[in-house]
Image (cartoon, rainbow, N blue to C red; front, side, top):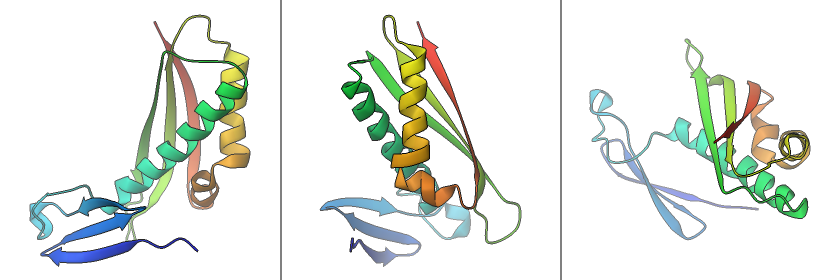
Length: 137
């Protein structure tokens, strides 16, 4: 079982300990925070980006595909009603490199999304997740 510790540090701020690393979480001023760290919900998108990003790089490495640059950009749309959650998530996989084979990029992303990324597996139960591949010059 994996455990994290999220300790209240005053007002709306919390200090989270994750895998021996510390993350400050806070709210904006209008709800009593001091804006000293990210909000919790966007960290869900960070988890998704890290999970699928690591999968894609690992799978591409096994396919002997090495991009010069790789970025995972994620946009999440929240519901209007409480409890607000991401009901639509769009992932942009952005690559740079010479002669990147689109079929291999697609295969790596599909394997991550359909088989390996546990964060995707959790979120796709409540959100419509779409993606696109962008190859920049």
